[in-house]
Length: 260
Length: 232
Image (tube, rainbow over all chains, first blue to last red; front, side):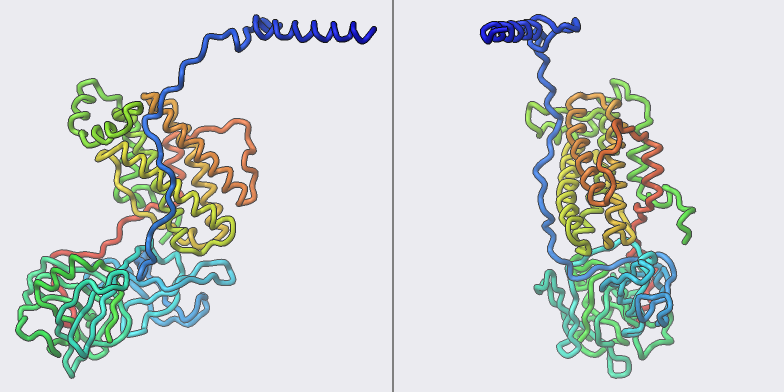
């Protein structure tokens, strides 16, 4: 076949193919170009905005609830020495809390959490299995109590937010110094001595260990505001009633407490 | 505490998940009910009206419940990735993926809450039990969550009554499918092994969520009426 004849055959084939597309395919179905146009798709009822990166400042501290009774150990290992055992409830009937300080994985691949726990200063600082704890909560506040100036300063994001005059422990039962945290919040009790609201803290008084319910230090109001500020308490941190109510509006449970 | 004897009721104390799931079985509301709900749920209605004119659609009874069901799953995912980001314990590609997926899931939550307005279910409390703090448990859980979301959206697609809502749900569904493929790849399993994905029904999703035991009771940190015994 000559070159001209080949070109004629090829042209004919292309023409036939186009005819099939425009009129109908050889399997009997109609081609796309012959279809009635499809309707426009319905608009979505809503759209999703562009994703935004996490814009959350680093927390001052994180805390978690104790879900099961657990031994606090010296190291992240089941064979490490036990420092103390944590209960799931506080003496006040609320859920027991710990501050979360760090993590480690043991040789078996189990996750351990370094905690600061309740008790005498340093008594419950150690390691517990992650399985004993609940969800994490972040706080951005810190309460700093100065035993020399009789003041409590609430910080948020590291900046002073409010400052209050306080009463602290007297010479026979001084308020313990160290790093602790606010463990619970009590209201609507019938005892004017504690004012309208009390926070329980994680620290026990080393001087009043035989006190009912273990002698935990509180932060609370008072029915003797005229005594503040000064060394007037059994170890608790006393505020005027207006001040404790204001503090309660600003300070969540789990807030770290520095007493210096 | 035993890991095997917990029920969804114990885990989902706030009832957010069950509330969303249970409503899916309610009989379709009557026209009068719908009118009444449109009045009572005016905040949701107003929120929907705030959308662009071309996409206005106040979710009706069943659609609203399906959206709340989706919202609960999105809460689960967004909380998971957000906590992972905050923990900062992952490394490499998993860390990058968690950051991206967290941003997307939070955007899904925001969009669904906007459409639902005051009818949106509350966010449950989640305890991820350390899977946000370890590479392999994180990846395993992420694959499970993304596969679950894909199957759950698909399981409700045929039940959504308003087409514009269906279009929006499918738009989220395909994103979840991309997430599933991404996390499967990072975990080292075939991203797309099957030619046909099966949907998951409501009871199947409920069973899987319950099995995770990630929905927790809220921590009780306050008490009324009990006299303090603090040192004073």
